[in-house]
Image (cartoon, rainbow, N blue to C red; front, side, top):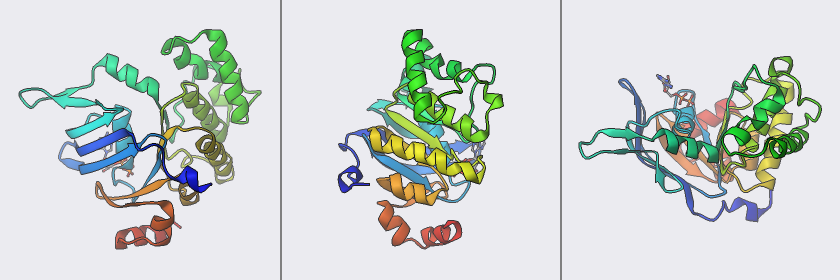
Length: 264
Ligand code: ADP
């Protein structure tokens, strides 16, 4: 990837975590978490299982409520405290608006099983963005071409392989022209022989768009190729944060060294 593509966007924070805490009951999963992601920046979160990486993506998508601190997306807080210090979640209308700007691809694809591939892809553009069915369909066909499934528009997700379903899920996320793309271990449920194809599609998305990406993956080669920055998590905190060359080749923290020697 060219060096200029490595500079990581225009530095406007698109995502900002301020003193974020997330607990499930007594289990404090994230604590005192502070970081920003600039527009166009691609940041990969690495770290042992259970360190809170997926929770971060789910918080940004408002699939989880934070229990302390603030998260801003484009300067807009995702929840706030009222005068009595009680936490007020995002309103349904704010949530709906936010989700038009954020695409998420999950480990388990999460396609609508009762809809065809085409219907899956045009659902949100038509019903959330108000795009005409014709324009959304044209766009869906272009996206299916891009993900290498031009002849699967009328197929049902259950008739597709895992790799094909994940490619549809990527097309569905891109159909909204998201400003932010959240990728949550998108290859972890796939057969090893199709992982490369899915990662290749995402590499191309990274190279040809300015979409801000927050990525959780165990694919370290992919993380090294597409990320501007890698953040190493342990116990709900960022213990190391830097360009991929540095994190992968010269990790400073002993915990990072141990983690990488176990996964590389
Ligand atoms: P990672 O993505 O790094 O593997 P997760 O964010 O999935 O970590 O999980 C972090 C911790 O939060 C784990 O201890 C997990 O059990 C807990 N956790 C995640 N989601 C929930 C939930 N919905 N309810 C209770 N605990 C949860």
